[in-house]
Amino acid sequence: IDRPIGDIDIATSALPEEVMAIFPRNVPVGLEHGTVIVVENGEPYEVTTFRTESEYEDFRRPSSVQFVRSLEEDLKRRDFTMNAIAMTEEGKMVDLFAGQEAIQQREIVTVGNAADRFQEDALRMMRGIRFVSTLGFSLEMKTKQAIETHGHLLEHIAIERITVEFEKLLTGTYCVKGLKELVET
Picture 1 (cartoon, rainbow, N blue to C red):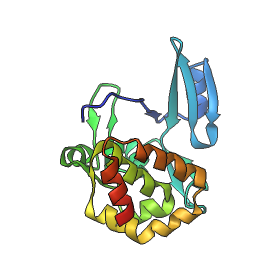
Picture 2 (picture 1 turned 120 degrees about the horizontal axis):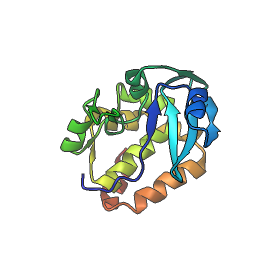
Picture 3 (picture 1 turned 45 degrees about the vertical axis):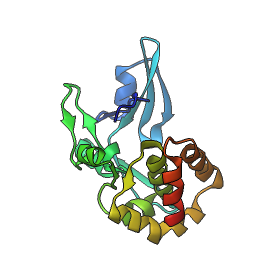
Picture 4 (picture 1 turned 90 degrees about the vertical axis):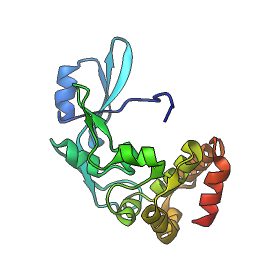
């Protein structure tokens, strides 16, 4: 999509304590979610253990996190297919949910059932519309319908979190398209 890479997320089957044992220069920033910042050659890298999530009681954060050894299980919990693409350490692309196809089609598509993804984390709806604004993509039909149906769940999200997404939407190259989508949904 001709955009510079903003950051690289490193995911691993290693448990947080295994990551900390392998990389002694580390900062355990979110152990409950499996996240450790590893400092290598003076550069910080966020390393997160593969996980599954469940019991989203506040429509934002999981109440239960289970570490797993499977990349596939980890990718299933992602918001959109374009964000569920991984690369192995050998450089092989892992695209179990047709994220590259969605990018080529310029569509925002949820991983799995859209309603489920938005009930887990209602802020994902704002993120999807923000991607419309920043990338110029369109919402895939089922994704758009789920936003229309579940938009009321944003009432459960802290206004500060919504504001951050809205401000990013306003600064997008395609902000008029994003605002139109926001109004329509």
